Image (cartoon, rainbow, N blue to C red):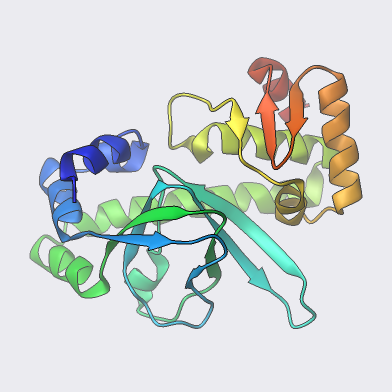
Amino acid sequence: MDLEKWHERLSTGHWYSHLPAVFQDSLCRQGRLRQLTTGQYLFKRGDPPCGLYAVLEGSIRISAVSEQGKEAVLSLVELPHWFGEISLFDGLPRTHDACAVGPCTLLRVPQPAMLHILEETPAYWRDMALLMSQKLRLTFINIEQLSLMPAAVRVAHRLLMIAEGYGETEQARRTLQLPQEDLAAMLSLSRQTTNALLKDLQGQGIVRLGYGEIEILDVQRLREAAHA
């Protein structure tokens, strides 16, 4: 594995780039590459803990499916995000499904290796807690928006969050590989409502809609729409 290559990619993320250098080195050296094909599951709800993951290429859909077959999409995880830390803390089964949206390359640090690193240096537990607290903060924001914000604001805000890497990256992305069905499922909106709201943003010159992707043309106006 090209450790230097993956280290450089992961360093574009806020969480990893602020870790102690020794911890960064341990994660990369204990990590193993995992390749997934389109639609392949990394793990499913109820599976036993299997370690900590980072996305190196592609994206992973984190979701849950009801007994009636309705899917709730929590997020699409992309480079340079890490995930899977909940089961590291409590040792309990996975809480959601994780499935590759397209061909995907992951760095996997196995559960025993992670626990060994943390046992050797207990101070690193704080870094892991920061990773989990970032996601908890975003979860509270999303719950609040579901209850209080109009659908148009929620669509703009979620597009902005994805473009800005949920606060993990400095540079906002202009093109999001994001099917409208997934965006609708993230926001608990119908496909038709989501499409109408996106077309309104397109009519304003804020985004451009493509097949399976959304291009952001004006980040500042999207930010204004997200905080209307």
